Amino acid sequence: MHEAEKLPPAHLILMGVCGSGKTTIAEILAQRSGFELVEADEFHPAENVEKMSKGQPLTDEDRWPWLEKLSNWLQKQDSAGKRTVVTCSALKRIYRDKLRLADVPLIFVHLDGPRELLLKRLSHRTDHFMPASMLDSQLDTLESLQPDELGFAVDIDDTPEGIAATIMERLNAVA
Image (tube, rainbow, N blue to C red; front, side, top):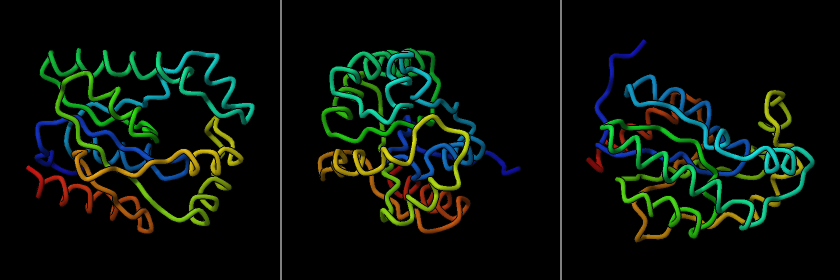
């Protein structure tokens, strides 16, 4: 186990499409930093989970209540002096803007990789409701971070430990 490593006083949002490693990397970062880990999927209503399980992409209307609930949760954690590592696809700028309405310090880390690598990872995954057939829809929806958004992209073609180490280095450079 690592001794807690210092990170910037912000909430980390690990974003990206399915199969990018959000949960695995978030677990490592939460362990290293002592930040609380939360999966944004936990905030989805049952209807959204059912829809995704059937391979149906969510609409913006499906996402607004989910993002609002997550944004409110972030605000409560921040008010309590807690810092978090959150896994959230945050595929579009407008979704990230919705999260920023919480008015808490957020840093977005985009876990990015080629479609072939993502498909390979998804083909080995058995414990998630999101089918691999949703990848292309997510890639079509994905809007990369813009220069005015606090955050950065990280290539996922490495081990989870290597990816987490890269993120820690980049975050400490931001601090």
